[in-house]
Length: 113
Length: 114
Image (cartoon, rainbow over all chains, first blue to last red; front, side, top):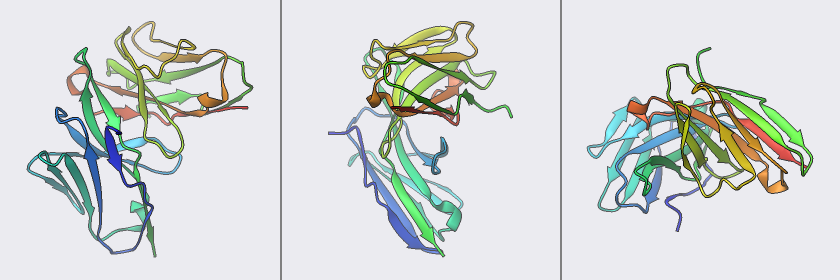
């Protein structure tokens, strides 16, 4: 089983739509959670961290359910510029104590006019 | 531009050749990471440095791969005797030791092994 699992999509939505992505993780000891955005042929960029209490940044809302080991990202009022791949990321602690970032495969979003 | 830079951006090589990539992190960042990303996958951790010390290596990093960060600033990743399976995007990221989870990525080096 992959450490971080996401539906690869693509999700095709019209402008203005609300879209939600989900992600599950296998390591119950994970402490930190993030969503990164990656545009085609570009590097990943941090979109937002995900907190237990949930957090919102403009049109973007992230939720964490530790009991179900589930993370979500909600995008409201989709814009054409939101078209990208959204990577779910958790930290994974190795035996050495090092915490590495573990990325999901990403969910591709296509917003059309 | 004070972000992470990588060179070259693209590299095409023949199987069996050696290649070397360079990463220049954000200047005040003491941690530097290398990742590999193949099509349809997320980035996979390869190795990281704190200053000049290489502190962690993934099992993905075979003996043909070697990374250095000799002065704790820029880093190089060398792949010897390249194989077609090495074709991927190689991403470098950097962070402060106090904020390891906020990593800033470079634009990547896209490698194609023919």
